[in-house]
Image (cartoon, rainbow, N blue to C red; front, side, top):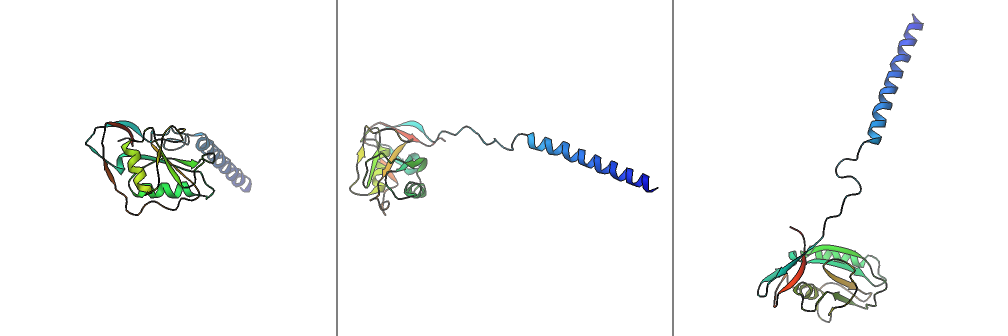
Length: 171
């Protein structure tokens, strides 16, 4: 009787181990839930033409922020402030080779209305620079060690003075 009980117990334990092994291997080799680890990044902005006389708002502008100074986290903190003001987040990171003391706005044209709206967020004493390397999408802001903070009272919209192409978040 004890011999049969031991055999039955061992048989049940072996079946349970095989059951666990089967489903364990199946779970380990299965695809990850959702879209997986490596998903194709979404476009953070698309080029859009705006007509003279129209108005653009912060929600229509993508901003990329880069840190050219030695203060850790400056670009990410400033990006958060831009997002709080309604701008769409572009790229963010370091631009150690950029020779920027306080801050600059980099754009394709000094007449770009999106660049002008971003410039107004920085306050007085900043300029739009053209012909710079493309570091990120949309309007690029490069901050140096002397940058303090965004302007307290900056507009959230700007009137377009001439036809232009801006980089807007996808709908």
